[in-house]
Length: 341
Image 1 (cartoon, one colour):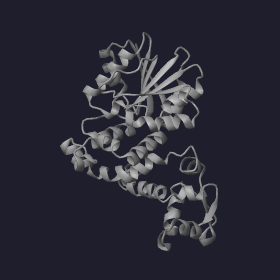
Image 2 (cartoon, helix red, strand yellow):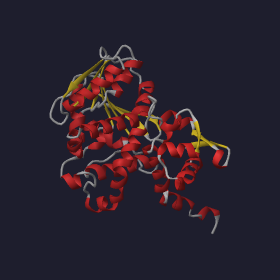
Image 3 (tube, rainbow, N blue to C red):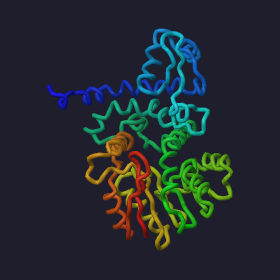
Image 4 (cartoon, rainbow, N blue to C red):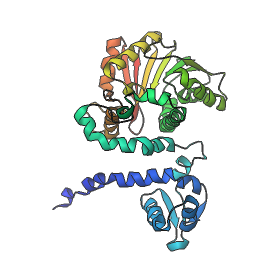
């Protein structure tokens, strides 16, 4: 067996759920929040988190080995502390916390992915729909705590991508923006903060309005960001120079994707821009593994929903009447697909 044929990647990925569950459990137990900016011994940290002595050292040292904790020293007197990344992104007391999406992964997605094989064989969702027979979003909107968890999770998940978009896209020729499916209003508030000449609208269902208003008031941007309620499957979209959809198109089947693109086209003026921020799959479907797995996740959540390539997006936009297209890479697997009217 040569070095080139070692099964290392096979084993690493096959047992990848071990690493995932260690991190998700650490977030669930609030390890990184408890540490904050402190350094604690394993005994003290374990006692504060209610961890049985049998698991303390294995658990915390695994987090060290995986790169999620620092440790100064060895043995029982060693001090554990956050890494720079976990201190910034996984401490609930910081505005930069992104653990909400990982909390949801632990609470919901981890068990649903156990049924990937069934999803592949049946083409049917494997989430709450299996039990309630209601679509995922209908279930979410009936349960305000779960809806708030979902909104918070998506806010953390989208923060980096939206920040990159706000900094990389040229807004100079536009005066108004409408973010469709705006949830907490994150994209609109980020745009308003960084581009003083823009007025923004965040558009979502009426049940989301109080959540959006709470976040916009917190950011002190009520004069720059307006909340408009409606149903984008039934209603026209507010008119704006830019229409954005952040992680929205992938939630729907092809018919509804094309419907949303047509609505965007109708809401835009000549030379207006329609922008879909997604984990765009590369056109040859070879390299963006995260985008492809996100599409598998859409199968698990919705059945007929799917992620797509930039070429797919452009073909649908051409059909709607758009005249020009480009892709703006944001960060990691995420890009902005941009169509101009």
